[in-house]
Length: 153
Ligand code: ADP
Ligand code: MG
Image 1 (cartoon, rainbow, N blue to C red):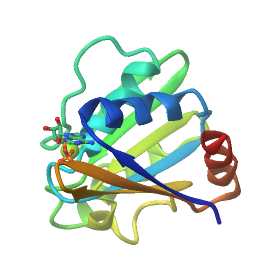
Image 2: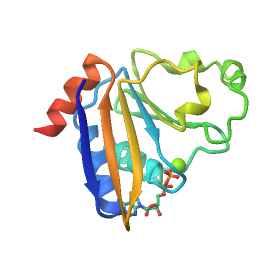
Image 3: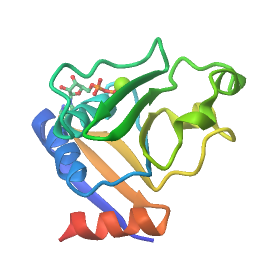
Image 4: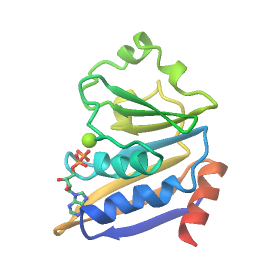
């Protein structure tokens, strides 16, 4: 499967990657975002969500676990599972109901929900490199593959 590695020299580069990806996205789609605290997962999500039409701030949904948006007919769910200590909490919140044919789900810290989340279409991993970041985008599904092929062109 397709994999792309990019250097992101500053915050704007991270936002722009989210923007670029937003142009290629149709639901249903699941994106996993991994990387240390402060790597840029929420920054990337902000670029994506604002580019899909959201005009306000994109806050980290850390305390609520999920922040919902409805943008031009797409249900966008931005998860941050950093504070999920027991994956069973996902059962209690009815996690499956978020992953519909109309939804785009962006999941920070997907490892915390291991076993209870549907498989991603695209896995994104952001690493600190010097003062910037390096990002690897990996396609997991054929749909994710199509998107990364378009992104690469
Ligand atoms: P996370 O959600 O992964 O914990 P955030 O997106 O909340 O991280 O924070 C990332 C921090 O790193 C912000 O302060 C942002 O300005 C900065 N940042 C984002 N992308 C880059 C980059 N490519 N190079 C340097 N700094 C970046
Ligand atoms: Mg975050």
